[in-house]
Length: 340
Image (cartoon, rainbow, N blue to C red; front, side):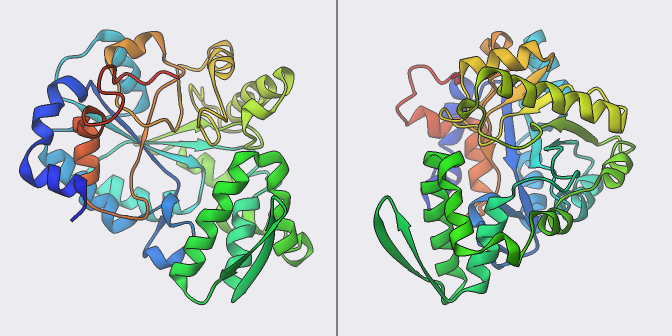
């Protein structure tokens, strides 16, 4: 039994909730699958079945499911009622609509889908999907990482997932440079980014249809999904401003909410938080782990999120996340408010 399950079953999470639970939690998801074996990127997938079970469990724990508009309202107003959960999906994958939206509609849960506009344009550099496709096609692979040749067996789903995790972790150290490794494993001529975008991401017509759904909010996720901190000031700001203009022009929406690509402290920081405010976003979310507190009224463009799903799907995890128990027993116990 994992630690979150022990904390949950013992009821200890209730002791942390008044101090570390804050106002609520924003949850982050990427791809939705029917089974974990459907993707090597298991850390960034959630099964539709677990999504439903997690929602039911959180509702049983007196959690309100709200939109990102309501998240902002509750922060600014200093709401002191029941804690909230907000569900968000990054990138604009088609499966967030095909597999997740039916669950959300059945349960009456709102969501925000952050769209990278190069995806519906079919021009996005989807190196992470090409990497996954490369591992799917191979039984073994050897790659040069920082001058050292590393060998990966890819005989089964678990080995492919392990290789994917290790390679992506290394690429994330310096994405714009290290992603070239993917081309060495699978040449772009063997499968195009355009074909992968068409296979995995919502198109403009699908997004226009989605705008009519009262439970769905479309937010912005830059034009090209670059790690913004690796770009100069003009390019980074343009990525954040131009995506909003494009979404407004194509879909007739305000696109008031933003998610930073990658979202770690290496990928975005105070400069990007200020750019998000300058671009006019009501909120902007990172991938730093943490709950939402009243102090975030002064940091609306630096809101933390927890992953929902991942390699281990246990309903104990979101319950413990919302309670703040993991922070209460961690290094940030003195000040649980994550703003940088």
